[in-house]
Image (cartoon, rainbow, N blue to C red):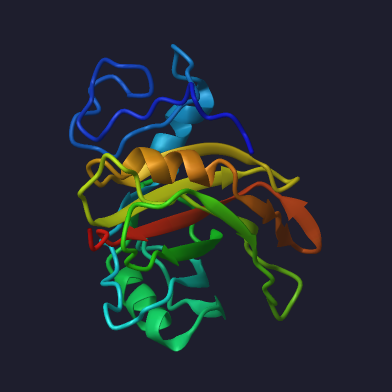
Amino acid sequence: MQDSSNFKFPLPGCTDSPGCLPGSSGVSSLIDTGATMISPMLFLLAFLQLEAAPPPQPPLQAVQAGVVVLGAEVNAARRLDPPSVIYGAAPFVGPSVDSLRAWEFGPYTPAGENMSITFLYRSRTVLPDQPYEFDLETECCPGPDRPPLPTKIVDPGYPVNSVGEGAVVLHLWIDAAGRIEHVMVVRPEPSLTEAAYRAVWNWEFTPAIVNGRAVRSSAAVVVSFLRPVL
């Protein structure tokens, strides 16, 4: 697994720390990997990124963890068209689809951007638990094009120093080889953001395909945490 010990992720509203744009108070946070300067790429991503992402309501009646993978295109209104379900079970698909209706993207996000959105719903455990990883097999999609798809997922576990509950939303940029290039926190959750952020850097993806060719693309990841019983 990739060493993420030097990662830094200022939260929304920061203005002077590494990973923040000058004067970026009130916008979603930029993420870097310990660099002290904002690269032109990260500056550009600030205008392309997912800006508003209300979290899903986890199905509290479900006793097991769940994964949902959706595919959707960004439209001219900078929102997502109705998504296709690539992977997922019934109790988790509905809340995932519903949450996407209010997602909004930055002003320069091109219409037609095809992305995947992966929801990881953690079950309510008795005690805080450790990270673990698992492989995911998905079948997608009719036609020559497809979004980037996760093939390995790392569950962050539940941090021992947290008493929080809620969802962390992350926006990922993935290169034409399927490697994660950048990660931005769109929606943080106190005491849970770091665990989700560190874990997602160790996810693996197949690259997006456009006209039969692998291309650079983006994906979103939502990690939903439930507070342990004890």
